[in-house]
Amino acid sequence: MEFREKPGWPKALIGLAARLPWWLGLALAGISYLGLHHLAQNPMPANLQPGQMGKLVMSATVQGLALAGQYLLPFFFGLGALLSAWRRGKAARLHAAAARHADALERMSWQDFEILVGEYYRRQGFSVRDNGGGGADGGVDVVLQDGTGSYLVQCKHWRAMRVGVQPVRELYGVMAAHGAAGGFVVTSGEFTAEAIRFADGLALALVNGRALLQGIRAQADSGPASALAEPSVPDCPACGAPMVLRQARNGANPGKAFWGCSRYAQDRCRGTREVA
Image (cartoon, rainbow, N blue to C red; front, side, top):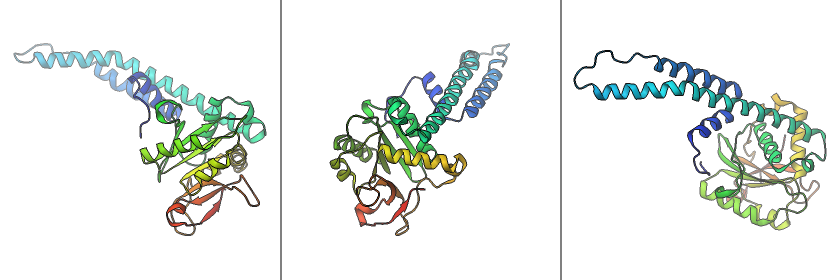
């Protein structure tokens, strides 16, 4: 699934390495240097035979590109690896701060909030891609991927007001247009009653600040290894369909996150599980 215009190849290479583990980006830098250096050192034909001008031009072009590429590609992959290491380190620090401090969400910027949300879902077992937010992508800030499909995440770092129904409608429209398996709207604050009613029964979970902090603390208590070992999306105990995160509107624990069956809207299946 693509949401934004394709960047130039230098940014694409840096972005690719930045989305990989830092050590894999460094490995790509080393492999690209060795491969292109080998091409750059290939000798040119000494004796030109009739009809081989085209072959000579092609060889010279490849060798010229390899001469420059043997330094450029490792440089871009190396930058991406450094960016990856910096992002993961910052994400871990933000996650730890949110687990320890009740006011952590209020004190962070919206950019840090998006990084934190990505780390929260990464620890659930999702593959996470930062989408940059805003623009023509319909406000999709993070794209999640697992064995069941793609999930779109919109982050709202709104502390002074509640998230209304309009952003929720917009994300649901983007989900339908791109065939996403589900979606999440995550806010540092709360949602209006209209927004909660709209999302009820859809494969679209609303996660408020209280539920987000609760989930982050549970991940911190269980440790990184245990959090990664948990299945990202459990199966419904009633029908076996994939489940989606929802938020209780009333009852004994209003605002608490739980797993609900993704087939509630179609088959009215009411299977639930507690969030580990």
